[in-house]
Image (cartoon, rainbow over all chains, first blue to last red; front, top):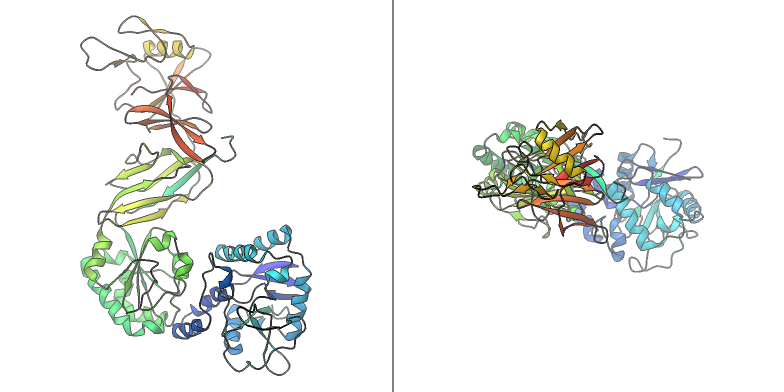
Length: 207
Length: 367
């Protein structure tokens, strides 16, 4: 297992040939994309924030956790961000997402794991966000820090159309989902939904 | 410094007597209708501020810095090049120089301003509201687009700079306009130049300077860490044999013969009441100097040769976590209190000819 950084300064983790972002994409990351001239507009972003308001990466409260992440986004909009982030970036497939989730669950979150994560060149604001998450989550394994559970619903690609995987906190989205075993939830695929964010997969062949 | 918490740290503080402004413009779609209003305001300021072209311009969502002169010449092109950037301040604050004063002209709330709550950058920002909604949600000062008020902000010169940190004692600095006050803060008032390099003793930390402008505006400026310069005490031989003899006797912890009253003085009695003189006179004829320095370091080698080093600043490090300071012409002892992690002035009397660790010399104060 190895940590590195994407161009926004957020960590990606490579484990058994899979490279994915450690966390679902945050608003902080997406804002970097939106700061490019001529792209999606401030008025578009403002509408999106009505669904899931923005939380500061510094000193956020536990109840604001989901507000860190970029949700309410469609798969097409997510893909525009991914193309900007890295030529090899794409949405994970259902099987890749589940495999990644299971692999992270098996990695104990030890002092060495933490040192390796913070030694990967992440930006200071990202470091603050991660430290705060660690304090709030007290993760026993890397999957807990990666918010495979208790995060947001995440877009994945399937054979037919994009669907959602994840197990958000009931306070964010009332559900009884099992992210490791459920089939992707598909009935929001063509709509904008406040619970849906995404995670980045870096395609090894495209890198 | 053997205490693990105490280090000798050097900082550089770059301060212009007048503020270096950075106008930050909003090219987002939400601000499209106010572009001309922003350009009009800047054109008015150009007439009021001398050397307007020396100030800087940035756009929300971008880290690129242009000159204010460019904006007046080709404002429309610059807006076009930054068209539809998100109204975010992070790229601006991360890229701009730390001593910029930001004047942010915007129409709608800055999305990521809360990430900069309590930051130095935010404390150095003024938000000019070109619309009707709050830009900052109460996080910072907002003013209406009034060119006269903005010009007053821009032209008000710096009137006082204070560097204060309870855990850090300034021990040397290269700008004579600064002095150490009784609260151990380094301060300069209405100086010709406020920039300085200074060295403190204390724990590793970021230090900042509190700046007060003539119009009453206050802001903080972060001091940058800098490599420590070589400390050279600048020893010179004591030319007067009479003074050298007194120093030798004192270093040997003996009484010395006063050249004025012809009686033996203990080594802490370095002044004598001379008939006809209103104030006691120094027993030394050449060491006091003109202008008088705060402290003197003296040392003697095996052959009896005596050298002196004049310390013009009002603080002298005596050893680990211990220093002598001159407050209102009186020498006092300050020590680092490990419990409170702060330097504290004690009631302890300054003892003449006390040994100074590190330089193997003795300290005296002739004030």
